[in-house]
Amino acid sequence: MIRVLVIGSGAREHAITHALCNSGASVSCFASNLNPGIMALADNLEIGDLNSPDRVTDYAAQQRIDLAVIGPEAPLAAGVADALRTESIPTVGPGHKLAQIETSKAFARNLLTRNGIPGCPRYRTFDTLDGVADWLGELGDGYVVKYDGLAGGKGVKVAGDHLHSHAEALNYCRELVTKDGCFVVEEKLIGEEFSLMSFCDGDTLHHMPAVQDHKRALEGDCGPNTGGMGSYSDANYTLPFLEHEDIKAAHTINEATAAALYKECGEPYRGFLYGGFIATTSGPKLIEYNARLGDPEALNVLEILQSDFVAICHGMATETLASIGVDFRPAATVCKYIVPEGYGAKPRRDCTLIIDEEQLTASDASLYYAAVNQPSGGALETTSSRAVAVVGSGVSLAVAEAQCEAGLAAVSGRGLHVRHDIATPQLLEQRVAHMRGLRSGHKTPAVMAA
Image 1 (tube, rainbow, N blue to C red):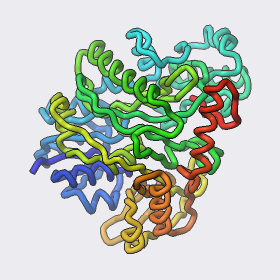
Image 2: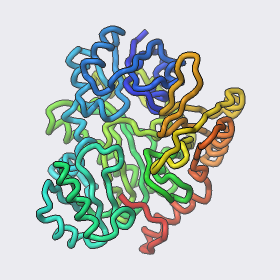
Image 3: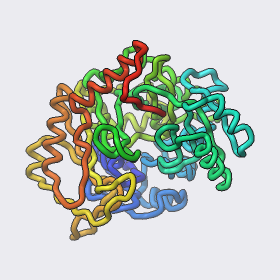
Image 4: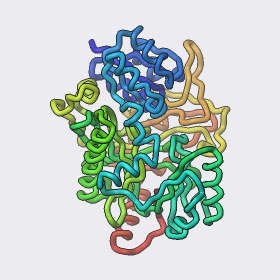
């Protein structure tokens, strides 16, 4: 039995652990919290600093690990994948240099530009205020300011949403410069966002179904941006508002990016390559790259993965992915997160969470624990972040959404919030109408922007 180390302890890592166990692996987890879902599946769980290469490699040696899978982005930035490979442990997750595709917005933009890869908006990078005002003048009202490094999703400010004048934009840029931060100022993209993730070993890519995440905290795409309130995928592996050429273009961009990374960094990209795209009137544009599975998108794609996940992970880690078949069940999926009230702004810290296991089983929905703890023999403890995710699947989005809602009904407690409108007919039609209007040259009120 292959011994696999999973690094991380959120809902994404719960789903990864579940998929690995279904493929016959013995899983150990190096975690930051006592996730009860992972604890029920893993043979061993250690609490520690995920970003410490020494702590992670020591634990891997103790557990005689054969294969490692890194969940979050911070350990990648800290060089944990490099350290594991130095100890001859095949690892799913790019090394520190390659992980810059996520950890540096400027690196990603410049990589695509140098290699003639389509999908970049107009942009410029800065580390001082010199030239910023002139560039904002060229972009007019349609601009986005992005901190160059990791910022927990809080480093991006969009004109019209967060910044309401060039003076406000310059103040934010000045704040970044004061913190010794580089930043990117780019044109604001109008369209519908989608995620296209790929299994990658440096040469071979197997693409996953397209998924749409919902960042806004409140129904109707209102409220602050969050880590993701939920997501959906359709049974035909595309999305209702996308055209065939959009999917094909996203595949091509991911493939070209993996090749460019190999060429420029001198080592293969072995891991999950996650393109965050936006469908526009001139084709898909790249909002950003992530160097790991998305959360919640991982929950959608792993829910319908039919192939051996251990074999896929081993293929990525050992550059043998070309010999591995990757198939997904032709089903739609809907994921909705249960979060504390106020999540994204001022989340409650006194929430309670009760799960009716019998009702959950009867719903046939899947539940994944996120930022919660459950000490041995103790009650379930929530935090200020996302608590649990519920995933439904079925022959159509309507069936999957109904199953997800049935699963959500099995969860109760105090101070909890859910975006129930995700994947509902009304919201789906708004997405379709928005893109139809853009493609026909008419603006619609529902605008998604990078």
